[in-house]
Image (cartoon, rainbow, N blue to C red):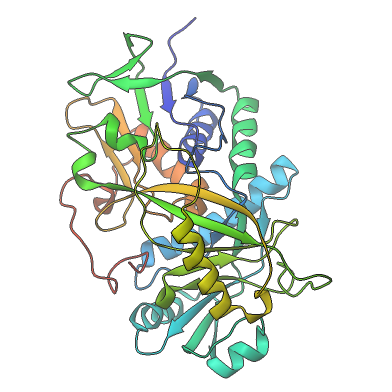
Length: 379
């Protein structure tokens, strides 16, 4: 078998989209994952993810998200499966803590992103599912919504294989010098892109681990009320509720209403089971009672335990390994990479082929903690 010109390690959304773009550029590409791409242990799993341009004062990610929305629609048409629901996104600005939301409105005005600003009373009238007692105002982005997460990974994988890409199962590790190893032998290719999500930290204890933290996020799905369609995506938007450290999505394809209270949780990636914590269940139920009175008494019908890898500034990582000049590290999702997937993969493929350099924000060196007002993710 001929040596591939490019190997992508990791079959989540970052790896799959990078592999697809490399294949479309004419490279001979092998995609390697420990499990079947789309598996339940990955970060790029679950039913759905929010896609929105809401990024505070950060114009870079705002524009990327706008482009990613178009790319997702193109992929949807190409694969012939529903990947994107445009139900809109609502950001709730908490009284006395509106800096990030204020900055988002300024960015939208500057870049021409369509949105509406509603008072608390207008928000309640338009979206009666929400209790807006603690809300100062809201921003509603109509050209936003959700991506079907598992389906998006599988669709990208199918398109990659149609483009001539090869998929292999294997556990890639690193040696003491952070050189990549597969089945006891050095992993070789002209270009190797490592997109292993949270596992990247343990693979690169000197290069990546010092600038990252791996945390778990517990997610609950709550049943909609009998005979009531008001919590379905046709009638309710996705939402971000920074004042309550929460976010969620309406019921889609019968999933139930998805809600998460972001309480960073520890996880051993290889040994912990993907089960939510009992204390998180109580916190999330309390949030649902406060924000969605119409869901009080409804039963939890599903739950997910997701893990993410955070960088101090919540910027992604797209940079060459400092000692191995054919190894490109790509990830550092910080909880907001999935929606950018098609644009991210295109960018990484271009960097990998030396068509251009990476962005300063994506470099490994010089990372620092940002304030919530500065952060593209608002945290």
